Amino acid sequence: SLTKQLGVPVLASAEFNAACTIPLKPLGKHVLRGVPEPVEVFTLTNARGIEIRAMTYGAIITSIKIPDRKGVMADIALGFDNLQGYLGEHPYFGAVVGRYGNRIGLARFSLNGQTYQLAANNGANHLHGGVRGFDKYVWAAEPIAGVKGVAFTRVSPDGEERYPGTLKVRVSYVLTDANDLEIEYQATTDKATPVNLTQHTYFNLAGQGAGTILDHELTINADRFTPVGDSLIPTGVLAPVEGTPMDFRRPTKVGGRIDAGTEQIKFGRGYDHNWVLNRKGDGLQLAARVVEPASGRTLEVSTTEPGVQFYTGNFLDGTLKGKGGVGYQRRGGLCLETQHFPDSPNQPAFPTTILQPGSTYRSKTVWKFGVQ
Image 1 (cartoon, rainbow, N blue to C red):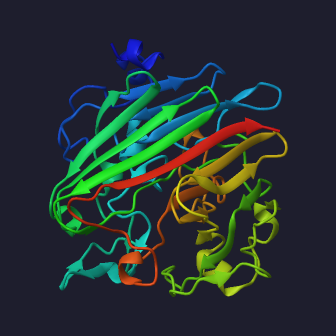
Image 2 (cartoon, one colour; image 1 turned 90 degrees about the vertical axis):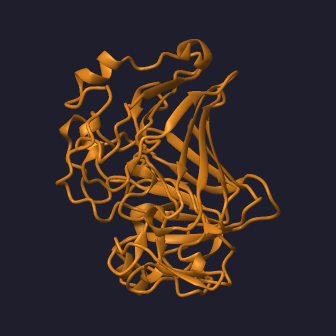
């Protein structure tokens, strides 16, 4: 029934097991971080041959296969060949992160007269939902009727990672024949709580494991960014990109100024910053465009969000073995995390990330794949 409704094959258990040291069946609580559910993998393909795989653990996108200008397919998403890799320590490859994507300063915030102390899992700060964020749970999943898509859902209970409120979350991936992957997020809560969901895929348009992303050409539709202090928490200022290494308003090589000696570059060890998108009204608007000149592969990102975090894999160092046993080297992938700004619960001048009972959190991002 999954195959029929999705219009694409679902990866069989035996196929996944062949590359997996952990079988695809109900897993013991010591194996899957306390979660006894099985893990399922869904495969979406469109009329042009693009193939995207996602699994219920972390709602992780495990692979994205697209053609180059000669029609040669490559997987452009960093990750692992088997489930075991994702159960170990890794930098959020392909995952949905939450309840709050990005950093919250000093791992605390105040809301309705109460201070909430979160886990400090990034120095003194809180990162990507804490010690066990949304990326480390098995989600429920079902195909979406009438399209090539799958919807992932989970309930984050009141007090999970010390956040207030029971949060019901739905994230969907829909692949169109126009080579778009549509990512939609929805959430409701029974208590006021911060919510900032995003997708953390690392892209290398030359193919995962095919060197660095320094020759990729990037455009970001932003006149301003949010400068950070030495722990990468925003100062609260919206600073102009003009005249700085943060200016990607025109196509620019990622590596062109990545080692500039400016304070911001030193703090991030490269790029690990939030850009304030040039928005006019609501709805989807262009956030960024990436071109890999050798292959011709392109990625265009549009979003309803006010910001995008551009990260260049500065902490990869070759020791983490990915697909095919390749060691992912420093700057071997880039992330374009569409989201609200980091530390927004502590920054009253930033757009709010507080979801109130009776309201619905809605966010949409589209990845358009192509060639030039």
